[in-house]
Length: 89
Image (cartoon, rainbow, N blue to C red; front, side, top):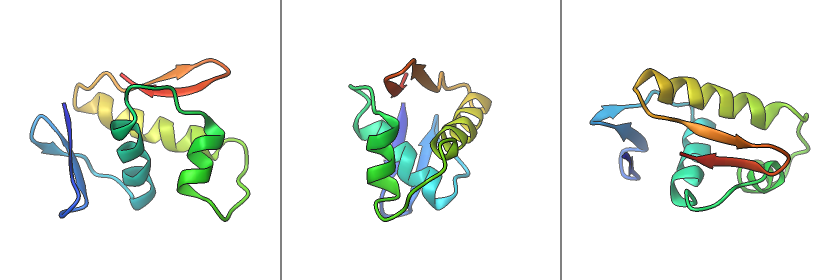
């Protein structure tokens, strides 16, 4: 189970802290708090980059980097739901 420590600005899995950039932390925290639903790219963009217009692959890149870090620790990761968005497994 992923654990968020707001005070330390850390997320851990199996007592191992995941090395995340600030935006990766923000994004993974959203996935954890909304793990019960599929989150669309546009929803992610509004939550993480509300004032910016992003290139189409920015969210994909962040999700990919987070997935690699989670997989390294043995976590199943984030699932892509075709044409709908993403969901934390």
